[in-house]
Figure: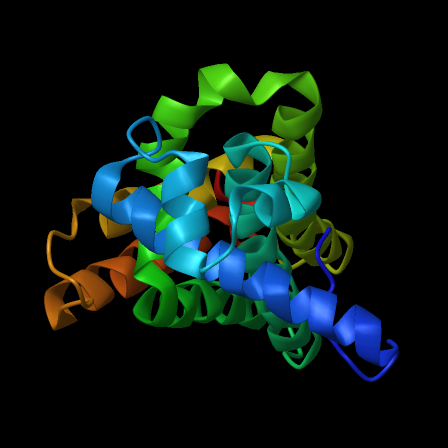
Length: 216
């Protein structure tokens, strides 16, 4: 996990972190422009203005650079999601807040979704178990935010008892699927309206219906 806060680090540590950020920024642009397979460590070194030996002192392979780029973004997204859901009062409001966080993140970092879902299919076979597990653990952090909210909603009688794992998959899939259909560099209003409507449908489907047991 890449930590980017600087107040806890020495000057040398801060300088090292700044260099890592330069490498990740340069590599992210190259992966988007050229694809994972066509981007070499030499390309990354030249773009970041690092000699080959210096670059390898920070990252021994481009697979580690790629995973670090995604981890950096996921850490930011998870932190924003936790903050947003903690400020909402009901489980339904927390799910709305989680949806809004995802949309806000996409507006600012749409390239991340391309790297994660499109470039990852290209990079995946080269990652190995350790790097793949690192990415999976980041995904689980975001999943667990939803799972905790859903569990809270069930416990408080707000949601019907259901498989929270399946509900989480459905929630994220509907949003990510709509985002991936977007072909422009920025989110257009119809897409945001569709995401809002999909989330509304989702919430309507999981909310506990009063008097349902007596409606037979």
